[in-house]
Length: 331
Image 1: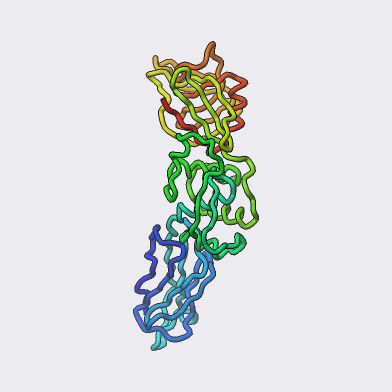
Image 2: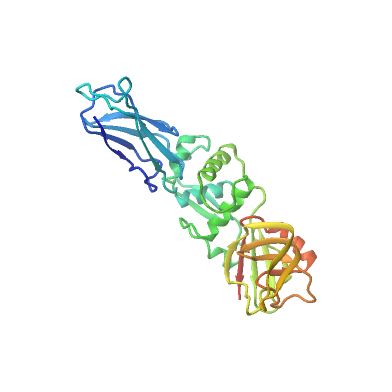
């Protein structure tokens, strides 16, 4: 007797974590056969389906990105047994990777945990945060509900970015802020660790108390940087952006690295190197960062792509520019 196939197919990376697992054999199976095993384990049960199939039906779910190993026992004593008494000669192991979870559920959880400027309320039956199996299932089949902006003072440059169910820079920034708070690698990627920590935080009510911040760098003269916190404008300063040959790119980008002090190194447009000591540094797009550097004046294009601020203003802005904070450059 041999294993004819395993479903999901070995190497698959798109299967939801709620999908059944089926092992198909070449021969008809005897009743009471030894069940295959799964690693990691989730709630559920194996059952004989037809004459040739063993199917695992989950009552929980594997987290997105989990590598699942299906092991079918073999050997003369413990191998899966056919109806004629023959056993699977050797153990068979196959692996597949669970596909992505629902972006809508990701947005819902980040809202419930206070990381989003939008709140979310369920319009269906309440699901206890402590119900682990139900919460796992919801990652692939999110409950119905409604998102609402918590505050109305946000600029259109932010509110226009929100798209329910779309993993764009808006949701990426929320993920990065959560990753930073929970000691995960800050890359905006919904990993197994991210989903696990989201479930843990939800179950233990570990909500974000830092609020939500947003920054807008305007290249309209005089150039400025404006910051909002929880829907209220809390900061504005004259700023410098990039000169024509090294402009600051338009767009919206999440803060991905922060340094209290740093020596920025690179090459000037004329080919000479530079090494400039800067302070209160928040990188948001490649080598572009918001930071302090001494200038005679501010409000005009003077940098090599960065958004430059006076010292006191840079210190104040740095407190708002946490990991994942969105910085929009326009004008």
